[in-house]
Length: 313
Image (cartoon, rainbow, N blue to C red; front, top):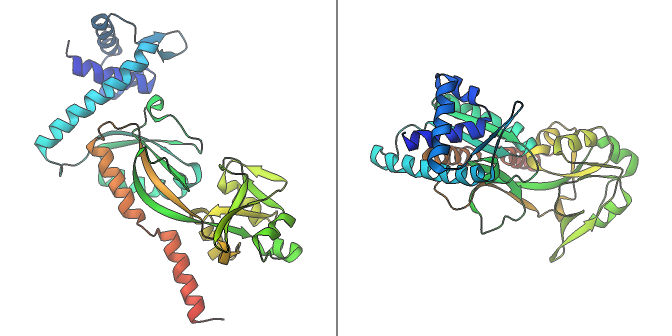
């Protein structure tokens, strides 16, 4: 038995959850895949997969062994990569966990360009605004957006995004424009339920203060909050990667810009401190380069702001 090949097959089956899917992908008989797994289990003296008529799942031994297999296969790839040279084209599968709105709006177009440039790479994107366990989920990395990331994590900064308060002109006509963050206490606010704080942060004087807000609508998705704000249902505080197009189109207006100093960091976060495969490093470098220190959605806003200041209407 070729143990490295068997490990590779085991990882594929564990991630696909199906013998048949892996057999079809490798263009071999299903029986060849089951023999590989059976041989590996016999060699180890333990069951790795629990089989039933309806589903395939990992045993506790299988969960532990899966991570070790990934590390070993990554080290083999690294050793071969060092000999072949880092300029080789990336190939293989990459699994990424990405936030819903940011992923659909900004990452899908970039990753589509990436797989067009590198046709031997396959990408599996999982969209979720909740923090997933990267090791248990078999992810190569996750894109995470936060005001503060745990410095103990292995990560790479991709870009930034400002956090701004916005409302529709129709809402402001009915309820007035807040002149100070404390005025938000008198307004209908549309809040993001997965935010780490129930309030909104503003720079007031020499300190950053959290202002408690309240309203009738609370959601766990930024695009849904954006739609509610456009319909005039209240004020929301959202990243500029969500609001920029609506503000530029005149559907929303930015509020309290003189008090806003909150900036979100966008990171690629890796599972543990294990070796990062070449194909993953190439993708992360690509995303960081395309997004840039000042991302395109904020560059457009800065350009429009400068044009308005130079040529006031």
